[in-house]
Length: 150
Image (cartoon, rainbow, N blue to C red):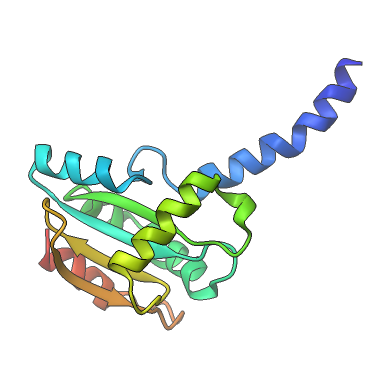
């Protein structure tokens, strides 16, 4: 009986691991108010990343080409990171998180461009942004955005 239960639990563990991998749990936040609060306390800007994790090929490539690099990890220490996922498969997020992310999309990403990196100050004022990714491995403009707004 124990093994049957484990078999049914295995897909849940795999799904949980997939979600865990998509957002580095030590750095990326998913709540706007928490990000702004931490930014005020730590006197840092907020880097907001809009992604469509299950449908956006450039978003997936940007993760590999930018977010998984040591250079990004070093620059990320200068920011409070906010991950805003807007998947087509609504089962990937809780209903509450999906609703909050859609509200942020309306507020901070009016053109609904993916991927989008947006820098906010600790009061939520928009400072700079870069949208899109050509999927060619060239991340110079993304790194420049991070270096110029820390």
